Length: 120
Image (cartoon, rainbow, N blue to C red; front, top):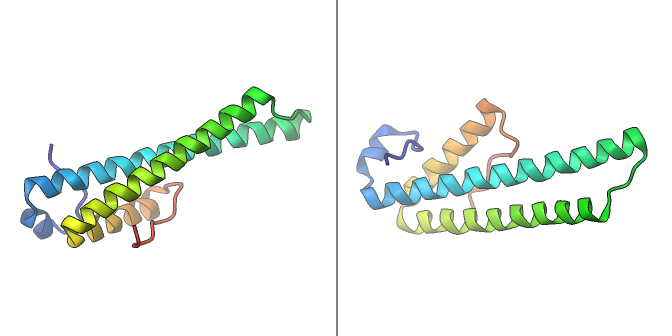
C-alpha cells in the first residue's frame, strides 16, 4: 500500500517502506479520530435539536450513548497521538509532512477539525 500523505514528492521518495507504512497508519488514526468526533457531535446536535424543537431531554440511554461516543473519540485521539509520535520519532520530516497534509485537508476540504498542533 503506497502512502499518499506526503506533500513533497521528493521527501516521499526518500522514505523507506517502513516509514511509509507508519505514516499511513498515523493518517488512518487521524481519519478514525475525525470520524468519531463527527459521530459524537452529530449525535449531540440531534439531542440538542430534539430538546429545542420538542422540549424533550435526553433519555438515560441517549445520554449513555453520547458518553460512549465521547469515550470512543477520546480513545481515537490518544491512538492518533501515539501513532503520530511514533512517526515523529522515526522521521520528523514525514511527521511534519503528515501534519501539513492534514492542515491542507482541513483548509481545502472543510474538515470538522482544526489543523492539529505540531506537538503530537
